[in-house]
Image (cartoon, rainbow, N blue to C red; front, side, top):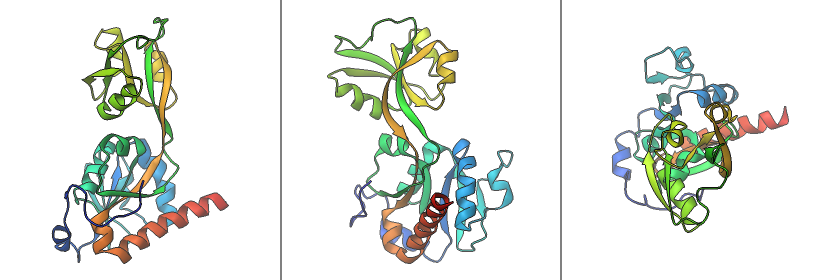
Amino acid sequence: MTAPQNGTGNGLQTGADLAVRSDSPLILALPKGRILKALAPVLSRTGIEPDPDCLTESSRRLRFGTSDPNLDVVRVRSFDVATFVAYGGADIGVCGADVLMEFDYPDIYAPLDLGIGGCRISVARPKTMVEDPATGQSRLRVATKYPTIARRHFASRAINAEIVHLNGAMELAPTLDLASVIVDLVDTGSTLRANGLMETETIAHVTSRLIVNRVALKTRPEEISALIERFRAALNTEEAA
């Protein structure tokens, strides 16, 4: 991701908007699920200790205090972290590169690759489909929760992707004739195989990134920069171990 720039791109968040929070705790947005589990050791090395129930799936709370009185944590869906940060609901966050690729918010700066949550965005089709359904075609129906990424990928092959936008159970789409292929996030590939699909292309490899609201970085530079450095030091400690 590019370095911070002046301005806010599309103006999602202004300095005046964030000024009202300048004396409040910074807000760190964390994703629920597997990335949060993988992030726990990194948080520990930064010295940031959220309330104990923050890291448990059973808690129904969404906002938590931390060992730092100047920092609170909010726990949201992984796909929503970038939106919270871009619109100023959170000052800093952790989300997958897939989310950054899909939304491409100009108001977000991503200074660090945390190297956790590794997976990939892939194209998959039924194992029984011998030929690539995109071969020789100018149009292809694609089931995905990544419409921007899918359209961009197939446009590079001069194919117009007709998107069937699903948020889950993507693997059912080809077998139920909703789409010829899917574009989805793949970890081990076991879910694809269990549902008779195979990967045919890898669009991008994905890891989790530390992201920052550009205006927050401009209005509270010392605090935000210090947090970034804590995460950077935590990564360096892991590499040295």
